[in-house]
Image (cartoon, rainbow, N blue to C red; front, side, top):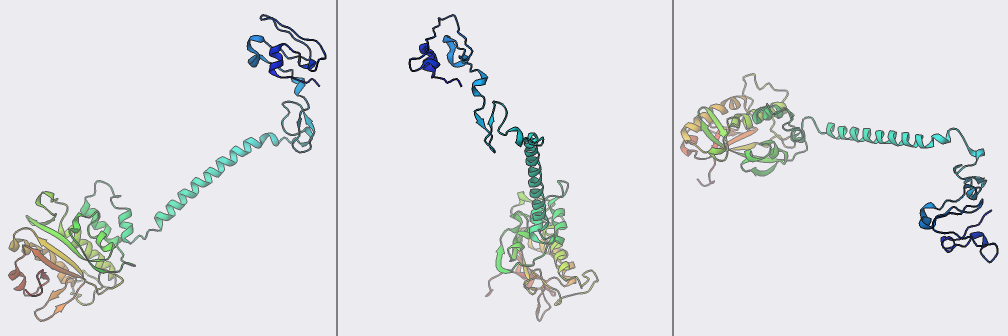
Length: 326
C-alpha cells in the first residue's frame, strides 16, 4: 500500500515514497505537473485544492461496524453479508415516523385543549367569563348579560360581607362580584325618560346599560334557577320560601345598593315601578308595617333618595341608606 507524506513534502519537491533517503526526488516547474501510477497529482500554484489522491489508496480501510470486514470507499458502514433491501429505507422510515409522532403530539394538544374548555362548568361564573362576548358584535352588552344569567351557578362560592363599589365598571357587571362572594352590589341610576340608566357620570351613560338589563332581569333568572320547584310566573307571592343567590348559604340576601343620581321623587317612582314585578314574586325583602320579611334581594336606596318617601311607603321594599342612629 502506498504511504503518504505531508503537504510540506510536496511543497519541497520530495516524493513521499522516498522519505528516509531511498528513492529519487521528483522535480517540477511552475507550468507543469508530474503524474505517476502511485503518485498524487498536484499543482504547485494550488496544492490544497487540486490535490487528488488515487481512489485505490483508500480501499479496504473502513471496517464493517458489525463484523469488522474491510470495506471499500463508498460501500457504506455495513458489509454485503449484513445488507438488507429494507436497510436502504431506514432514512425514509425515520422521516415517516417523525411525521407520525408530530401528528400525534398535535392531536393530543388539541384534545387536551378541548377537554380543558369542556371541563368549565356550563352553568358557572367561570363559564360566563370564559365565553363573554363570544356571541358576536351584534349583541349589545345587556342582551349578552341577559343570556348569561342562566349560566350562573354559585356552587363552591362562599358569600362574604364585601361590597362591590361601582359594580357596573367591572369587566362583567354583577357576575364578577358574585364570583368572589360579594353580598352587596352598587349601581348608580340616572332617570332618562322611562329608563333607569347605569353609569358613574351622565356622560358615560348608554341606552343599553340599564338597571333592568344589567341587574334586575339577570337576578330574577338566577333566583328562578335556584328554585326550580317554584313557578315564579304563577302570580303567587313566594316570600319566605325562596332560596337566595348563593348555594353555600341560601338564606343570604344580596344587597342591591341603588345610588340615585337624579331627582328623588321622579326617579323613585320609576324605580318602584320596575321593582314591583320582583316584589310580587317574593324576591324582595320588604316591611309589611310590623315586621321585616327577608328575601333573596334587598334593595337599599342612597344618593339623592328622600328619606320621607321611603319611610311613608306602606309596603316598603326599598330601604334607606342611613346611619343606624338616624
